[in-house]
Amino acid sequence: MKEDILINKAKKGDKKSLEKLLYNNYKIVYGYLIKLCLDEDIAKDITQETMLKAIKNIKKFNGRSKFSTWLISIASNKYKDDIKKKKNTDFLNINDNIVSSINDVKTPEKIFLDKEDFSIVKKALLLLPYEKRKVFILKHYYSYSYEEISNILNCPLGTVRSRLHYCIKKLREVMEGDYE
Image 1 (cartoon, rainbow, N blue to C red):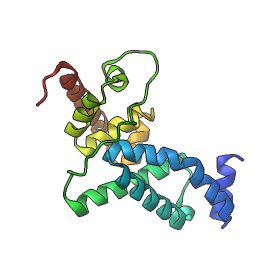
Image 2 (cartoon, rainbow, N blue to C red):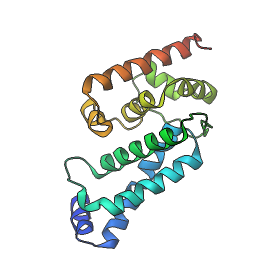
Image 3 (spheres, rainbow, N blue to C red):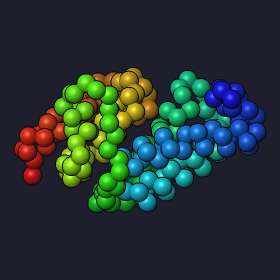
Image 4 (tube, helix red, strand yellow):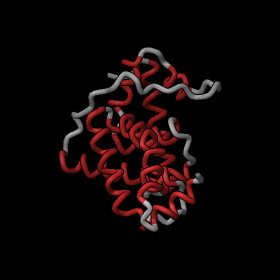
């Protein structure tokens, strides 16, 4: 069944349609969060909180973006709230299974993402502040456009570009061994 039909039915109270929507998008949200927070348990918790918020607010979904984009926006805000509450980013234990291969063109970012030595990826991701890491993940793991990222994170387009530029610069430093 098409996503827009499921959304319309879910907004009208059809629990099976809502369940199907959430099921279809669970892996996307969880995958995003595990890359963002770098901790499997935290990613699971925030994914669950995201799904609960989506259930409570399904009628507020306006359809101007994909359903998965709306969920990622909720997840980003939940993670940001979690950071604020804990005021501590030392929950950065990384899962060794989050490297994804990205197309055939070998840009510095793609070379970095394709590395088999995950310790390099771990070091680089740990160096990126979470606000900047979100942009990198959305662009290079999920192929969102700058405009979509701007909408998801509710920040100006220039900020998205600047954060991505920062991430790429850091990745190049890591690849060249200029980090500490």
